[in-house]
Length: 105
Image (cartoon, rainbow, N blue to C red):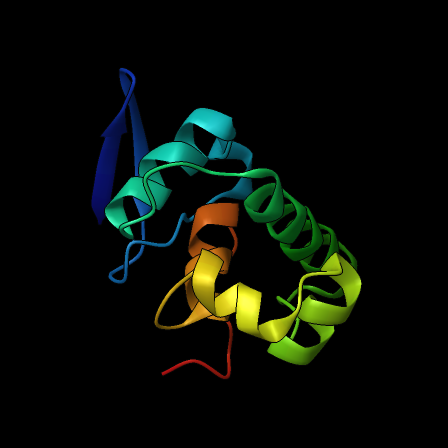
């Protein structure tokens, strides 16, 4: 099993780098994962998306589709691609500490 070392904590991740346990997630972990995805700073827009990702996962057991994510977060789809370039649903899920969305290959 792969792991990440973040601020002295060893955190298990799957083969794609997604957290195995949402309980291991916190804002420091999010910042670390974001940097791995090429996102230097998490803005208010990022946090709005992350909150929706986690809320939807806790309610349904999966992350939202891109359309639902845009609607629920109030962030237009075009802006989602600016916040999380080259795959906003996949990258937002990783930074939010939830499993890779099922529709993402």
